Image 1 (cartoon, helix red, strand yellow):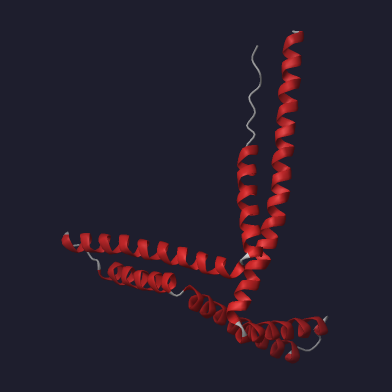
Image 2 (tube, rainbow, N blue to C red; image 1 turned 90 degrees about the horizontal axis):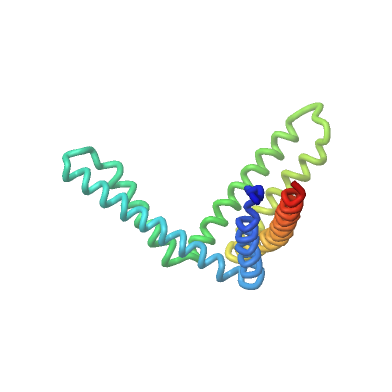
Length: 191
């Protein structure tokens, strides 16, 4: 008796849901530490990649190949990675500042454009959107690390909800897979 083999990957969904749930819980409970951990890990990865590029550049130099740009890139990666790993909170603040200024500039351009355009429908909505963007940027500037923590907390909530939904999906696939196998076994016995 041969049963039909399924191509179900319910376990992959199950594992991914657990990862999302673990991240979500950790992000909600301890968002400040997660910001530091993520940036430190990113810094280490960037620095290691920079070291690999440095070895490749030195190997290229040894073989009389062009290496200057790769050498420069590797040094920048090593320095940026090390700074990020050593001072993750300062890097988080810097990144939040960049996002803050970007949202303020975009909001200001949008506001000026909306006010100049004649005959634009929903003008109030676009003005509100521009003011909201500018306000969001200003809030980020005044407390960048707390803003980063709030962002991580929000991603944690999203990951937790997503993880629960994917977990339910994984069990649904598993249930369907088992029902299909049972049906196939019953069908082969009758033959």
